Image (cartoon, rainbow, N blue to C red; front, side, top):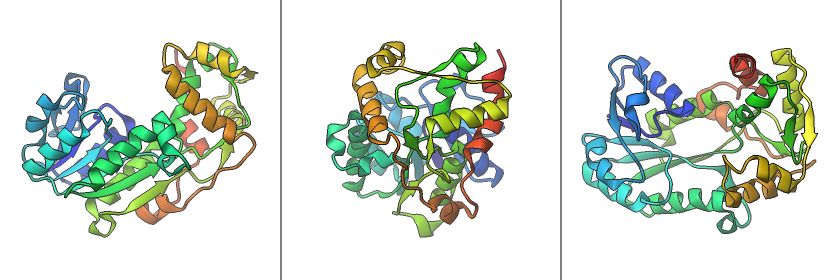
Length: 279
């Protein structure tokens, strides 16, 4: 039985479908299982990774876990998982842990703390480290639909947008193919792109003109204050500034794990056109 955490997320949704189609037993965990709409026959369970009281029921009978965790109660989760008989965890981490000083970056450190806790445990751990999710562009949906400019402090900042389906398929390979167990995999999209290039591709796909309003760091933080805590906003801004005009490295790991090249940002935009055009 495979437990998939973060059941409402796009990666978990795609991964659940892949495993279910193969007839593998899957349990889908979420802090709000009543909001889930899994494939017929997939059992859901309340699993709040900030509440250890939910761990025992979710982990009963589980042998493998797909985990996207916060560090708050990771030791409790690992202990309970080991007691329950879990032998393999596939962790969705972040390539930010490979930065020169991840301890100084709150986003990177939260992932690093989880990695270190799992690697210190007796459970075999496979780590997926994606870079930038293409789905981050979803933050532009509201201004695009409203016909307003997209506010960007560093439109020339490069990133490596990866489609959530590629992450899910990589996770599927990591869970089901013993050759990958215990591996460390950096996942990226097929090319390094600036935010401005992504905006241009999104405009082409949606058929809508999209302009950029270049704002200062502080203006962007104020605009995003209701959505991103200041400490995380600063970490993002620092990363973008450090990659302004500087391409990032991309890997072929998606193809190594899945057998096909990583999907392009244009493919992601096409798959999500309705997010930017439907009110």
